[in-house]
Length: 189
Image 1 (tube, rainbow, N blue to C red):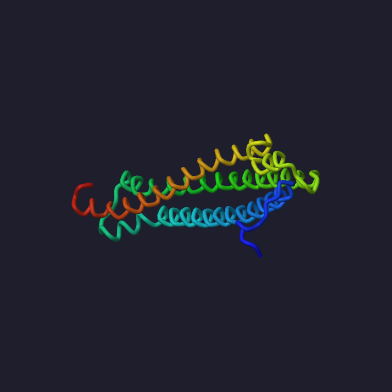
Image 2: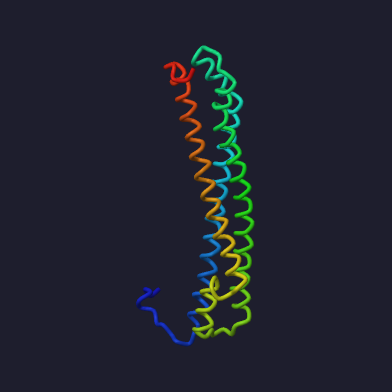
């Protein structure tokens, strides 16, 4: 087999069909990777909500055992509030993830269909300008372009909510650790 540099490049357009087929194969592999990433995110979010729920239910009793005194109602609310917000953010992020997965799937299907229909209708030898148009299908096909824009928009929201959920989880944990120290030092009455 010849190296890429040694291969003859013909101007008859037959290499465009191979390039487009390679693009299709790569897109399928990319979609599998994106799916795996989304599944991992879903698992993380499930754990974030589960940890928050556990702490929401148990944090007051655990804190009482640490500081060996009763905790006032206002402080109980302050103690569980971060965990409640974290759980809510986790659920919201999971909903946004579901919408992202849905939009991503529609985008992938429409993009693949546009490319495959192009290959099915074009002659064996594809003119270079037609080939470049389909290689850049995200910009040249209006339906694909609108679906990509939709995915890009919701993906930004998903990333923001994912980071917020994780930050809230960490802040809730820190607050739960600091609270008994502040109570024992008398900073919180």
